[in-house]
Length: 357
Image (tube, rainbow, N blue to C red; front, side, top):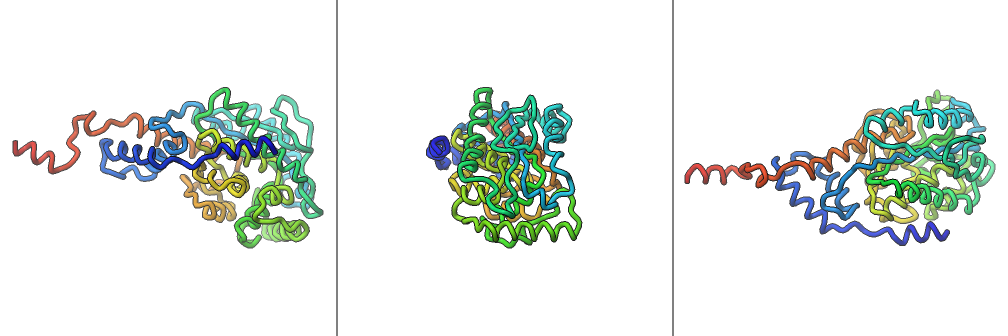
């Protein structure tokens, strides 16, 4: 756990003084104070995260982690497990939704095999195993594997950091991972399985009832400890979820904002938060997924999503769209003229005084 411990030790509280400086600049821009709403809040958050009064967003990276889940054997998805490997190759060819949206915002997509149940070629290989075990029969993974998955995420982030990262986004691929995420969210938020479990890739009522029953069985068999993130991850999580937790922790350690995608990324955010609560201030929710457990997750973390577009794809799609809004917020902060720069009267009484003179 040396890598994980070292990363946690570097995560600091955000300096509120520099946020106050950003607020003063925003108040002096050529607009009524507060008139750009959440764009101003996002700009201040990025200033606080980076510790830079004039941050730039040039290098945008979406981390899309892929892994399979043993619980897929219990028919918790309408798609067969083989789709995970097929979609990884689609990502690598640039044909998936995340590739389209990443090109749209000028981001690069980093695709990683964390535990796909097939031998893949020409992809970053951090495979912990060929999918997790079936969590209805025991641990999804060992505690050592859980730590390795988190540390793999940290390593991937730091490898990419050498190429430049100004803002990061999380994404996922893995048949069965909404079941694992529902289990994680239920345990950590202490909400019922029914309250946090959705239809995933499109389950009908009967299949949804089966999925809820499967998750309840996994929780009963494993009894994860809600106060021990590693325990939760190992018993009912996924290799890609662990890696995404590592991405979030590494982003905070390096003072880089991280845009959280949908439900699976939200489950990873809960794991990261339970490991080190200070990471919450470094996270920005790109959107709110249709998956009912995602709203529960965001409320628990106190994160307000930028967008709500009825999306439920994953891959990092919501993170990419949210990232474009954050970039717009930073452009407002850095490129918009102040009243003094533009020679514009700041208040009505100043204008009236000038006329009186």
